[in-house]
Length: 438
Ligand SMILES: [Zn+2]
Image 1 (cartoon, protein in one colour):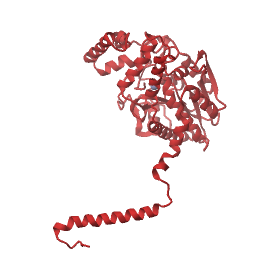
Image 2 (cartoon, protein in one colour):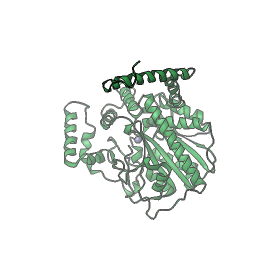
Image 3 (cartoon, rainbow, N blue to C red):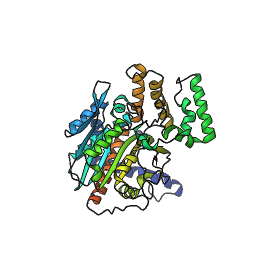
Image 4 (tube, rainbow, N blue to C red):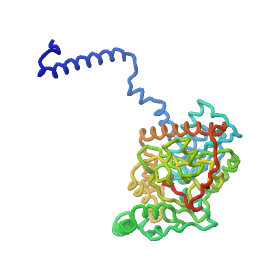
């Protein structure tokens, strides 16, 4: 065997030979020491998180509700009268309290504000409930689960409620008058053209292209998504008055006495915006507010703020944030959208257009062939049928649960000073909250 004292020209091959020999030896030693260990790939594939993926997510609203009620027999249903699901099943918002009824700090977890986005939120709720079987909550902290806040949309795979209303645009003060959306008015006829292809579709596309050229992409997004209160057949319709779900949310808050608690943190699970599989914690609080300070301490730099411009946000009208703001005020609550990314914006626009077209021009039958196809596309967009996406969802959901419980435990114990901000959390016009929550 040649040694390292060979000529310089031979040095490199000799070193490689020596290195290869050492590597082979190391591999042999490792293989010997690995004897008896399980295959790492198999072990990871059988991880507890992936097992939860298989059991936490549901195939339809009915199954999701059954899982929720099985885990929480104490749940209180708020039944939606006069409507049924596709399997003739009852539709309801189900709420359940877990922990000390007198707890001063509460974590509220909401699923299904936007119908089929509930498949994700329900999955997280079921995962958290399984975790809760293994341990108790911190002293002074309780959980309130709200399952299927928009049960009709959840069951029928529509983002909107049975009123055709986007629930996350429905919390404006209707008595004060709904806010205008001039951009929407300009493009109204073109958002949902009479056909999904052909001349009328091309005319609509051209009108939108011209609007973007003239006003920019951001102005278009505001026109399309900020919310409109004039066209019940249009997209992102905020309603003419409070929806059944909005009234029921208020009833739930009253039943559990949320207004008198020391602090309430609300996590509202959404999907469809952002990087695939990542759950962005979006704050709609004013940057200088006490609630935003609590968000920053509780969840750290992963919280994005529309007010600070750390998220590519547009202003939206009438979000759920306004409900909690009116109920609890600044410094006594924290409302965050946990928004999980799925596919790109163009995909979202295509699937939402097909859904709205079916409703406005296509007869609205969601049991016939095209209706079933639209439903399936909606579900696939808002809760991808991909175990890795769901794994990322649950991982992030558990992280958020851990951070929230830790923060609330500190608040309950008095070690987390809450201050009333000098500026109120309503620095924005009363009917507008910034945020990119879909
Ligand atoms: Zn949403």
